Image 1 (cartoon, rainbow, N blue to C red):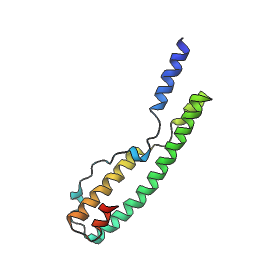
Image 2: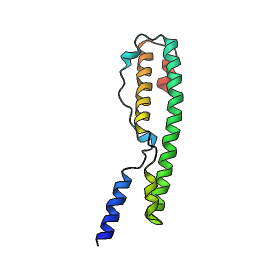
Image 3: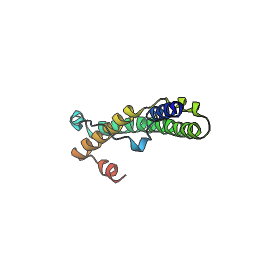
Image 4: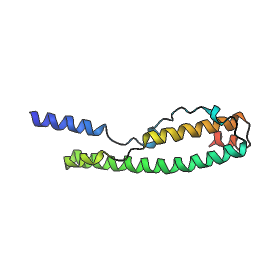
Length: 123
């Protein structure tokens, strides 16, 4: 009886180490006031830079979440040592920061009434 209980505790502990899917990561708060002195051109350039990083980190996070899901499925159904492969490269904090920066840049662009700001809120 002790071995199945220990296995269950181990499995639950490893589940907590799974990478979060990118769409489940909330944005960290970033104040739009730090962009108050930016021109619309500077805001647009910074938005593009952050968006490129966001796409890259989102892809890496999704890849890690997919890998963890496969390892979890294999570990629970077929081969429990596969659960040890769940401790991967989770970039949740970086993704949350980038999402927050993007939202702050959007807010600053809207506040300055930049021509591209309407397209940001529509997409």
